[in-house]
Image (cartoon, rainbow, N blue to C red; front, top):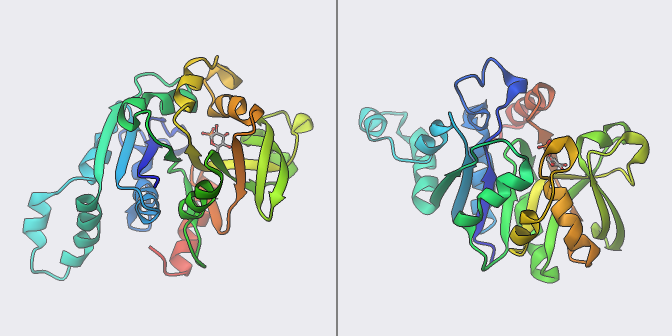
Length: 275
Ligand code: G1P
Protein backbone atom coordinates (compact mmCIF):
# COMPACT_ATOMS: atom_id res chain seq x y z
CA UNK A 1 0.00 0.00 0.00
CA UNK A 2 2.76 2.47 0.93
CA UNK A 3 5.33 1.69 -1.72
CA UNK A 4 7.66 4.66 -1.65
CA UNK A 5 9.86 5.91 1.11
CA UNK A 6 11.63 9.25 1.07
CA UNK A 7 14.93 9.73 2.87
CA UNK A 8 16.04 13.32 3.39
CA UNK A 9 19.81 12.91 3.47
CA UNK A 10 21.30 16.24 2.54
CA UNK A 11 22.30 17.51 6.00
CA UNK A 12 25.92 18.25 6.85
CA UNK A 13 26.22 16.26 10.07
CA UNK A 14 28.23 18.99 11.76
CA UNK A 15 27.86 17.32 15.15
CA UNK A 16 30.10 14.54 13.89
CA UNK A 17 32.92 16.63 12.48
CA UNK A 18 35.59 15.81 11.54
CA UNK A 19 34.19 12.33 10.71
CA UNK A 20 31.61 13.87 8.38
CA UNK A 21 33.98 16.22 6.59
CA UNK A 22 34.23 14.00 3.53
CA UNK A 23 31.76 11.26 4.45
CA UNK A 24 27.95 11.56 4.56
CA UNK A 25 26.63 11.30 8.11
CA UNK A 26 24.11 8.75 6.85
CA UNK A 27 27.05 6.44 6.15
CA UNK A 28 28.33 6.45 9.73
CA UNK A 29 28.14 2.84 10.85
CA UNK A 30 26.32 1.48 13.85
CA UNK A 31 28.39 -1.69 14.24
CA UNK A 32 28.94 -2.79 10.63
CA UNK A 33 25.96 -1.16 8.92
CA UNK A 34 25.58 2.46 7.85
CA UNK A 35 22.73 4.33 9.49
CA UNK A 36 20.79 4.77 6.27
CA UNK A 37 20.81 1.03 5.62
CA UNK A 38 18.87 0.47 8.84
CA UNK A 39 16.29 2.92 7.53
CA UNK A 40 16.11 1.28 4.10
CA UNK A 41 15.70 -2.15 5.69
CA UNK A 42 12.91 -0.82 7.88
CA UNK A 43 11.14 0.65 4.85
CA UNK A 44 11.51 -2.54 2.86
CA UNK A 45 10.21 -4.63 5.72
CA UNK A 46 7.23 -2.26 5.94
CA UNK A 47 6.37 -2.95 2.29
CA UNK A 48 8.22 -0.19 0.37
CA UNK A 49 10.29 -1.03 -2.65
CA UNK A 50 11.08 2.41 -4.00
CA UNK A 51 13.62 4.33 -1.96
CA UNK A 52 13.75 8.01 -2.88
CA UNK A 53 16.83 9.61 -1.42
CA UNK A 54 17.29 13.38 -1.31
CA UNK A 55 21.02 13.91 -1.15
CA UNK A 56 23.37 16.84 -1.52
CA UNK A 57 26.93 17.55 -2.49
CA UNK A 58 29.46 15.10 -1.09
CA UNK A 59 26.93 12.30 -0.64
CA UNK A 60 27.90 9.99 -3.49
CA UNK A 61 28.94 7.24 -1.10
CA UNK A 62 25.22 6.65 -0.45
CA UNK A 63 24.59 5.86 -4.11
CA UNK A 64 27.60 3.59 -4.27
CA UNK A 65 26.48 1.78 -1.16
CA UNK A 66 23.14 0.86 -2.72
CA UNK A 67 24.77 -0.45 -5.87
CA UNK A 68 26.67 -3.54 -6.84
CA UNK A 69 30.38 -3.58 -6.12
CA UNK A 70 31.71 -5.92 -8.80
CA UNK A 71 35.33 -5.75 -7.75
CA UNK A 72 34.59 -6.48 -4.14
CA UNK A 73 32.23 -9.31 -4.99
CA UNK A 74 34.79 -10.81 -7.33
CA UNK A 75 37.51 -10.54 -4.68
CA UNK A 76 35.61 -12.27 -1.91
CA UNK A 77 33.68 -14.82 -3.96
CA UNK A 78 34.12 -18.26 -2.46
CA UNK A 79 35.72 -16.93 0.74
CA UNK A 80 34.22 -16.92 4.22
CA UNK A 81 33.42 -13.23 3.77
CA UNK A 82 31.02 -13.76 0.88
CA UNK A 83 28.02 -13.85 3.19
CA UNK A 84 28.76 -10.37 4.44
CA UNK A 85 27.97 -8.89 1.06
CA UNK A 86 25.02 -11.13 0.27
CA UNK A 87 22.67 -9.39 2.65
CA UNK A 88 23.19 -5.92 1.16
CA UNK A 89 23.19 -7.38 -2.35
CA UNK A 90 19.75 -8.84 -1.71
CA UNK A 91 18.50 -5.49 -0.42
CA UNK A 92 19.94 -3.63 -3.40
CA UNK A 93 18.39 -6.09 -5.85
CA UNK A 94 14.94 -5.97 -4.29
CA UNK A 95 14.44 -2.19 -4.28
CA UNK A 96 14.68 0.67 -6.75
CA UNK A 97 16.80 3.56 -5.53
CA UNK A 98 16.15 7.01 -6.92
CA UNK A 99 18.02 10.18 -6.10
CA UNK A 100 17.77 13.90 -6.36
CA UNK A 101 19.72 16.68 -4.72
CA UNK A 102 18.70 19.44 -2.39
CA UNK A 103 21.10 22.13 -3.53
CA UNK A 104 20.73 24.42 -0.53
CA UNK A 105 19.81 23.59 3.05
CA UNK A 106 16.41 25.17 3.42
CA UNK A 107 14.88 22.85 5.98
CA UNK A 108 13.21 19.46 6.24
CA UNK A 109 10.03 20.67 4.54
CA UNK A 110 12.06 21.84 1.58
CA UNK A 111 14.04 18.58 1.46
CA UNK A 112 10.78 16.63 1.35
CA UNK A 113 9.48 18.94 -1.36
CA UNK A 114 12.59 18.25 -3.42
CA UNK A 115 11.58 14.59 -3.38
CA UNK A 116 8.31 15.37 -5.15
CA UNK A 117 9.75 14.49 -8.56
CA UNK A 118 10.73 11.07 -7.21
CA UNK A 119 7.54 10.38 -5.29
CA UNK A 120 4.83 11.85 -7.52
CA UNK A 121 1.41 13.09 -6.49
CA UNK A 122 -0.60 9.91 -6.71
CA UNK A 123 -0.22 8.14 -3.38
CA UNK A 124 0.76 8.48 0.23
CA UNK A 125 4.42 7.85 1.01
CA UNK A 126 6.68 7.28 3.98
CA UNK A 127 9.49 9.50 5.22
CA UNK A 128 12.35 8.15 7.29
CA UNK A 129 14.96 10.37 8.92
CA UNK A 130 17.87 7.95 9.07
CA UNK A 131 19.35 9.79 12.08
CA UNK A 132 16.52 8.38 14.14
CA UNK A 133 17.31 4.72 14.46
CA UNK A 134 14.22 2.79 15.51
CA UNK A 135 14.24 -0.76 16.78
CA UNK A 136 11.36 -2.87 17.95
CA UNK A 137 12.73 -6.13 19.31
CA UNK A 138 9.23 -7.35 20.05
CA UNK A 139 7.34 -7.16 16.78
CA UNK A 140 6.64 -5.00 13.75
CA UNK A 141 9.14 -2.28 13.04
CA UNK A 142 8.00 1.30 13.61
CA UNK A 143 7.17 2.14 9.98
CA UNK A 144 5.23 -1.10 9.61
CA UNK A 145 3.21 -0.19 12.69
CA UNK A 146 2.50 3.19 11.12
CA UNK A 147 1.42 1.65 7.81
CA UNK A 148 -1.21 -0.31 9.74
CA UNK A 149 -2.44 2.92 11.34
CA UNK A 150 -2.50 4.60 7.92
CA UNK A 151 -4.59 1.78 6.49
CA UNK A 152 -7.26 2.56 9.05
CA UNK A 153 -7.17 6.37 9.10
CA UNK A 154 -6.06 7.24 5.55
CA UNK A 155 -4.46 10.53 6.49
CA UNK A 156 -0.96 11.73 7.37
CA UNK A 157 0.59 9.87 10.31
CA UNK A 158 3.42 11.07 12.56
CA UNK A 159 5.26 8.84 15.01
CA UNK A 160 5.50 10.32 18.47
CA UNK A 161 7.06 9.60 21.83
CA UNK A 162 6.94 11.22 25.23
CA UNK A 163 10.04 13.25 25.98
CA UNK A 164 11.31 15.03 29.05
CA UNK A 165 9.68 18.47 29.18
CA UNK A 166 13.18 20.01 29.12
CA UNK A 167 13.82 18.47 25.70
CA UNK A 168 10.71 19.76 23.98
CA UNK A 169 12.72 22.49 22.26
CA UNK A 170 14.50 19.83 20.17
CA UNK A 171 11.41 18.44 18.46
CA UNK A 172 8.16 19.13 16.68
CA UNK A 173 5.64 19.01 19.52
CA UNK A 174 1.96 18.22 19.12
CA UNK A 175 -1.32 18.97 20.87
CA UNK A 176 -3.70 16.09 20.42
CA UNK A 177 -6.69 14.15 21.61
CA UNK A 178 -6.27 10.45 22.26
CA UNK A 179 -8.83 8.64 20.12
CA UNK A 180 -7.78 5.14 20.99
CA UNK A 181 -4.86 3.55 22.79
CA UNK A 182 -1.63 5.16 21.49
CA UNK A 183 -3.46 6.92 18.63
CA UNK A 184 -4.16 10.66 18.70
CA UNK A 185 -5.91 13.17 16.48
CA UNK A 186 -3.52 16.12 16.17
CA UNK A 187 -5.05 19.54 16.76
CA UNK A 188 -1.92 21.68 16.85
CA UNK A 189 1.79 21.30 16.34
CA UNK A 190 4.80 23.54 16.74
CA UNK A 191 8.41 23.15 15.67
CA UNK A 192 10.94 23.27 18.51
CA UNK A 193 8.93 25.49 20.87
CA UNK A 194 10.46 27.36 23.76
CA UNK A 195 10.21 24.95 26.67
CA UNK A 196 7.73 27.18 28.52
CA UNK A 197 5.49 27.26 25.44
CA UNK A 198 5.49 23.56 24.57
CA UNK A 199 1.86 22.43 24.32
CA UNK A 200 2.72 18.92 25.57
CA UNK A 201 5.63 16.55 25.86
CA UNK A 202 4.57 14.50 22.83
CA UNK A 203 7.39 14.79 20.33
CA UNK A 204 7.46 13.87 16.66
CA UNK A 205 10.28 11.52 15.74
CA UNK A 206 11.72 10.87 12.30
CA UNK A 207 8.99 8.68 10.84
CA UNK A 208 6.11 10.07 8.81
CA UNK A 209 3.48 8.88 6.40
CA UNK A 210 2.34 11.81 4.28
CA UNK A 211 -0.58 12.16 1.92
CA UNK A 212 0.60 13.64 -1.39
CA UNK A 213 -1.32 16.91 -1.03
CA UNK A 214 1.46 17.80 1.41
CA UNK A 215 3.59 18.87 -1.57
CA UNK A 216 1.26 21.69 -2.58
CA UNK A 217 1.01 22.71 1.07
CA UNK A 218 4.80 22.82 1.48
CA UNK A 219 5.01 24.93 -1.65
CA UNK A 220 2.94 27.59 0.13
CA UNK A 221 4.64 27.21 3.51
CA UNK A 222 6.80 30.16 4.52
CA UNK A 223 10.13 29.60 6.28
CA UNK A 224 9.52 29.15 10.01
CA UNK A 225 11.80 28.13 12.88
CA UNK A 226 15.44 28.96 12.14
CA UNK A 227 14.42 30.47 8.80
CA UNK A 228 13.78 27.01 7.36
CA UNK A 229 10.74 25.50 5.68
CA UNK A 230 9.44 23.12 8.33
CA UNK A 231 7.44 19.97 7.65
CA UNK A 232 5.77 20.59 11.01
CA UNK A 233 4.28 23.86 9.71
CA UNK A 234 3.00 22.17 6.55
CA UNK A 235 1.48 19.33 8.56
CA UNK A 236 -0.24 21.88 10.79
CA UNK A 237 -2.41 22.86 7.83
CA UNK A 238 -3.57 19.26 7.46
CA UNK A 239 -3.98 18.96 11.23
CA UNK A 240 -6.31 21.96 11.30
CA UNK A 241 -8.56 19.95 8.99
CA UNK A 242 -8.36 16.89 11.24
CA UNK A 243 -6.11 15.08 8.79
CA UNK A 244 -3.11 14.21 10.94
CA UNK A 245 -2.96 11.27 13.31
CA UNK A 246 -0.12 10.76 15.78
CA UNK A 247 0.92 7.28 16.76
CA UNK A 248 2.82 6.45 19.93
CA UNK A 249 4.95 3.64 18.54
CA UNK A 250 6.16 0.49 20.27
CA UNK A 251 9.91 0.12 20.37
CA UNK A 252 13.03 2.16 20.93
CA UNK A 253 14.29 5.22 19.16
CA UNK A 254 17.90 6.38 19.26
CA UNK A 255 18.80 9.91 18.24
CA UNK A 256 21.87 9.09 16.20
CA UNK A 257 22.14 12.71 15.08
CA UNK A 258 24.17 13.34 18.21
CA UNK A 259 27.13 11.51 19.68
CA UNK A 260 25.37 10.35 22.88
CA UNK A 261 22.46 8.76 21.01
CA UNK A 262 24.84 7.25 18.50
CA UNK A 263 26.89 5.59 21.23
CA UNK A 264 23.73 4.41 22.99
CA UNK A 265 22.47 2.80 19.78
CA UNK A 266 25.83 1.17 19.19
CA UNK A 267 25.92 -0.27 22.70
CA UNK A 268 22.33 -1.44 22.55
CA UNK A 269 22.74 -3.24 19.24
CA UNK A 270 26.06 -4.73 20.29
CA UNK A 271 24.81 -5.95 23.67
CA UNK A 272 21.67 -7.40 22.16
CA UNK A 273 23.44 -8.95 19.23
CA UNK A 274 21.32 -7.07 16.66
CA UNK A 275 22.67 -5.88 13.34
C1 G1P B 1 13.26 17.17 12.62
C2 G1P B 1 11.86 17.79 12.63
C3 G1P B 1 11.28 17.76 14.05
C4 G1P B 1 11.31 16.33 14.57
C5 G1P B 1 12.73 15.76 14.49
C6 G1P B 1 12.75 14.28 14.85
O1 G1P B 1 14.14 18.01 13.33
O2 G1P B 1 11.94 19.12 12.14
O3 G1P B 1 9.96 18.24 14.03
O4 G1P B 1 10.85 16.33 15.91
O5 G1P B 1 13.26 15.88 13.15
O6 G1P B 1 14.05 13.78 14.88
P1 G1P B 1 15.74 17.87 13.26
O7 G1P B 1 16.11 16.84 14.29
O8 G1P B 1 16.07 17.46 11.87
O9 G1P B 1 16.26 19.23 13.62
